[in-house]
Image 1: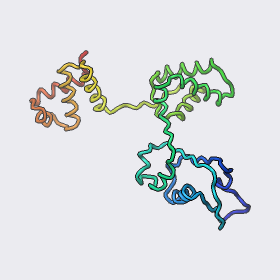
Image 2 (image 1 turned 30 degrees about the horizontal axis):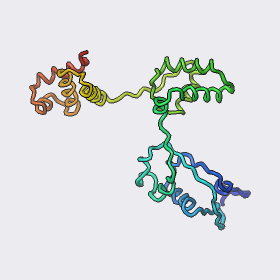
Image 3 (image 1 turned 120 degrees about the vertical axis):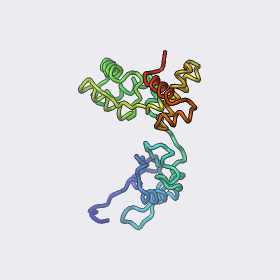
Image 4 (image 1 turned 60 degrees about the horizontal axis):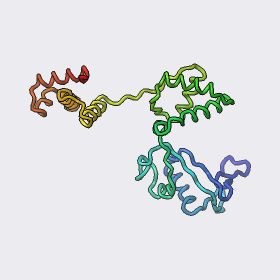
Length: 237
């Protein structure tokens, strides 16, 4: 091929029989590459670039992506034939926040591993110091939106600056209010005035005017306004 000055073996050619090839970030490959990979997955055959010979691939293909499965199916990113050839066995790794919720001790293991890799030494004392700073800065229930990569950056920042701010993700106000109302109804802990006030606020956020909320609820405009102002001050204890 153009620019070639010596023989070169591609990854499929270099893979030993019954070995494995990892295709990382498979969710980013374009359609024309999927077509070429499909031949390897389906027929186990490939042709090196610039060659006319057909070789057989006897290894195993492992693919990885950080995209949700639903976002690549149905022709959104993957061709259907490519997806179904690729997905014979799927292992879904849950986000870090879910893993830590199910097994809080996993954070200690990850911190130990990350610190040892960065510093070249194993130190329980250093791990405890790093964890103490993380708990103080982020809290014990931080959601880790960047998963393990964010954890690595967090550890690096704590080791260098003894600080890490994290990323704050807030729910939309209407979603938070809706959950509060649902929880209050389910647990029977919300007072009727607070329930009405919260419902009026949700309608106001959707409809945009007191008049429309009044028509929707059958209450007068002045009452609607009073309920919404009450809700903005917070529910009664």
